[in-house]
Length: 153
Image (cartoon, rainbow, N blue to C red):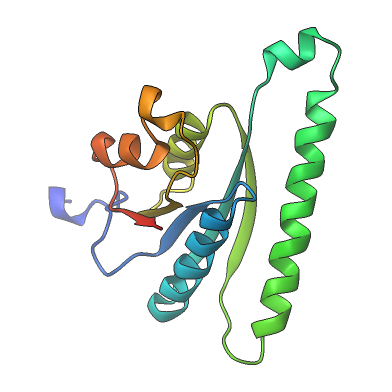
């Protein structure tokens, strides 16, 4: 068997097969999901919708039930996504999955993209002023240079 006959994962050879989109409940993340959904439909790719549950050590130390709170956010996101997909099911169909990862948004999306063997990553533009200090998730994903990254305003 020659080296070219090995069946290892290769990104982007025939168009994207898995498109990861990060959602967090913000309007820009929902716009990113809509954009990624259209891309997935046109490419006949799997849309992997990813919510990264933040690890809130400070909140937990104050007795705030962070796992339950972030779990509720994930459940609400799934409800909203299902409602949106139900509204357009007669117009277009897209294969999608919802995944939850834990950690900070950047590392969570990197882990998701690696584990799901993403060919592309789509995120919404940051709506936070704090990203100027630590850098936005989108900029950090672009700088990582592992996947094509689309940033939706």
